[in-house]
Image (cartoon, rainbow over all chains, first blue to last red; front, side, top):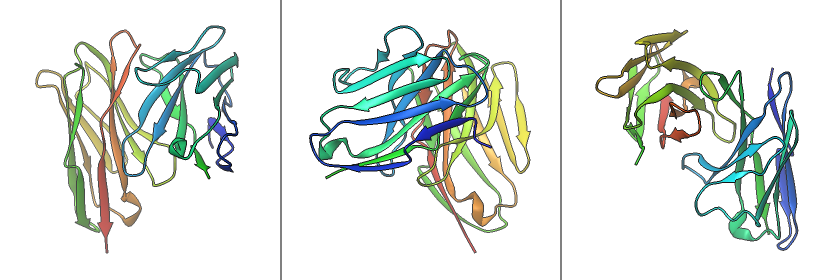
Length: 117
Length: 112
């Protein structure tokens, strides 16, 4: 079964609203989680690294005020797309390493498809 | 700049045939190299993970090889099935574990 769970799996919202996506590690603790964005027929693009108890690290070109990340516990990270616009429509995926980022197994969530009207 | 290049970009094969996907990387030194399978609209699922000291690792019909000297890895799929149709992604982790560099993936289509 899944060891990393994302919710919701699909969300449609109006332009200007904010959407929160949750990523949970189900049977292990993850001090670090990763958030990605994927456009159709393209590869995963790392957006940010979520760190439990501290600020997230954002990749170059990713607006931290647009994509708010909170890692409030060792099993939960959230990504909030603020004031969403149609260009934010994408497939958002999270991942969490079990056993350490270096050699641990990296598990991905099932992804959350965001459609902004 | 650390890069991971995959080839071919896409591949079509007949059911039952074998195929090999390539991954060339410039990440050095690196901690591990992983291969993932991603079905359309789903999250990636791990196939293999190899450290720099490993040369080959198998997972059922999937066999990954690694040549750290030439910085190349391959994923060999034996006796392909329709369900193998997916994107295959190569991911290299730097030695510090602070960066995971993703390849753009190879899209495999298996037809009957």
